[in-house]
Image 1 (cartoon, helix red, strand yellow):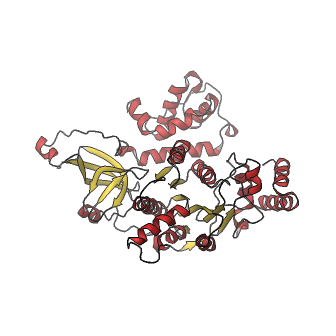
Image 2 (cartoon, one colour):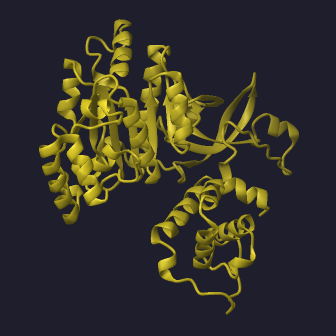
Image 3 (cartoon, rainbow, N blue to C red):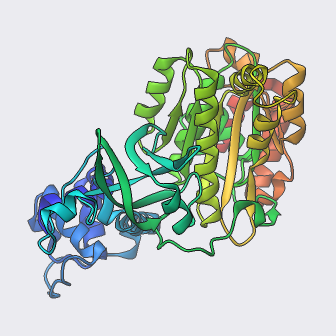
Length: 451
């Protein structure tokens, strides 16, 4: 494989390795069987390491020169990270051109007429399926529609569902449109008629938490032990204006992405805030329908984002859907209700989205984290369904710390099951400090606990 092709396919892995210092790359190279790693410059060494880790390059002959790698030199999580990135890149290997970057493939065993008529596809794609009234359309990872359409017969033949991440081949059908003619993968696996449905899995209590300690935000690091967020949790963050609702969504999404969870953000805020989210968390899917978008467009983004997350969870992955905010979603539901879309109960879709969060027995999980205003009867209904309820803190906001969390009111149901024994003791000490000194007491305890 040419170097340019290898770097295109394994770009996420290259970027991860390039972010390490040369000593970290050398240690990983030794761990994956690369010989004499100190003789190469960083770029060349990363290319050799990718070849070894992916199995593209033949194993290098072993020699006795150079220091042997010590197990302590390479953190196990770094090795696991490389393996996980290799697996993710291999899933997408044949289809990385994607719907935004068309790649041509010429076939020698067919006539030009047959290729032109769709007998052989000349375009590779990967995209999220959005179902329409008849057939469907492919969207990018951020929910933006492309010019690739899917016939209803294709959806039925391959047992496709809205939100499926599908890959395959498409042929031009005129007027700047392309139509899918063959599907190779659904969610990284071969198409199957016997896939289980999200709604068919029993729901379990969250058993593993999403690590928030990686955040630079003090409130989230405290929340990691005081109000932990588990995979499959329904989280509602209620805060007044200026207490950091959007900042909370952004920082929590950053933590989820760092933990290699499939992070999907449903952003209804200002256009510049939506762009900031995409730039701050490049690995996340940002379904943006900012201020000024039509209510129908916002509901379309919400429906597709939810379906995409469900497909991830039912196939064994862990998805995190972050909503900014519940208020904007309800406004859009109310506007569409006036047009007769929801009847009188315009709460139904928003409640269904929030209630979808769960840990699936025998599969993955869907976590929903939503921001909402501090006051208002409509939002009390969501608070009743939440199993992790967080409140913004005026004290933190006055000190210029956003997002801030009022830990005297916030809670996670059955949080003990998400903490280790030492962490439960630390949480008890932090709560004592908060009871005595509020946010200032928490800061002092942070220094003592080295959090």
